[in-house]
Amino acid sequence: MIDRENAILLEFKDLFGSSEGVGMAQAPGRVNIIGEHTDYNEGLVLPIAIARNTIAAFRANDSRTVTVRSMTLEETGSFSLDDEAMPGEPSWLVYAAGVARALQDAEVPVVGCDLVVDSTVPLGGGLSSSAAFEVAVGLALTAAAGREIDRKDLMWACHRAESEYVGMRCGIMDQYVALFAEEGKAVLLDCRTADHKLVPCPTDMVKFVVCDTAVRHELANSEYNRRREECEQGVEQAARILRAKPVRALRDLDPGDLSELQQELDPVIFRRVRHVVTENARVKEAVNALRDRNYVSMGVLMDASHDSLRDDYGVSSPELDTMVELAWSQRGVYGSRMTGGGFGGCTITLIDSGRVDEFCKNMALGYQERTGETPSIYVCSPEDGARIVHPMPD
Image (cartoon, rainbow, N blue to C red; front, top):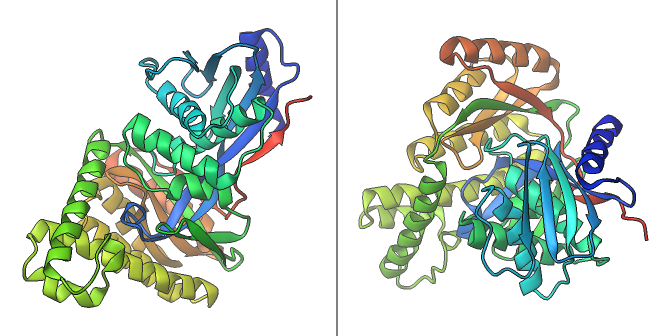
């Protein structure tokens, strides 16, 4: 970490002339254990923060301009805090500008500052690189202005940046877990109430292993938004069919409603609804399985989640299916599923701790043989949420 921080400070000095008075904010990526595509349906999710993170070095610059350097992409961009239009290039700058605008709209003071941002969260891999960036930048912007901000207020600002200014109609899970995660705990988040409970997530007998397919499909964003539209159609149709039951979101349905809905819903819409309803039920069961250390039950739920995401929600891909099927064939594996928005990205596998090294080796070789791609593989433990690593000196 020290070497990485020094590299960031050196980049800051090279770009802005000095590294004196620089603060640092850090925000983690996340992996979702179970509860996929339920967050924007006001449902339940069960993610953990991971060690891969985004660091933003920052310093106020006595202007109304924010300049951001991405070490990851080797690009620099600037925007004015007084400009109503979002910046066009580089394309990623809208994430930072969106956070600044959302903070200002919430009457949180923001000042001009210089930032150098570095990330070890793989871009587009389903591990929430965008939320890690947004939260790190949000902490940096508020700290540069000498302000502390309530974590939920920052979560909503970062969520608004992505959903409104970037145009990715995501739920609140990614930004929330980046801010509220704790070491050794999974975050059971109720996306309707925006409240959470921490669930002990021991990693002595088992480990979570993330396998990155190294594949990113361009249709991910458009199909993600389409799934939201299909879910909204499902809500409207279900409310009409189940007249005696208030249905504000798919969260309000339970598995007992599915047989009646199947008779009248469009088949595609029904499959989307069925995934969300059964996935919410799986999250509830998974919490009990984790608390009881019943890893066999946990694995069964993860496997069922992948089947549902593949068959009912239609967001898997050949590469994700290959990775999951390879995991299912390995010794010591309790369960495996795709994680994240889908159409490429990563899988998460629950495995016996004594089999991790063998698993990682076999997965790398097997996936390369089948696809020609070299996967990245990470062993993950639940980590703490975002924080100011080094405050900006007074």
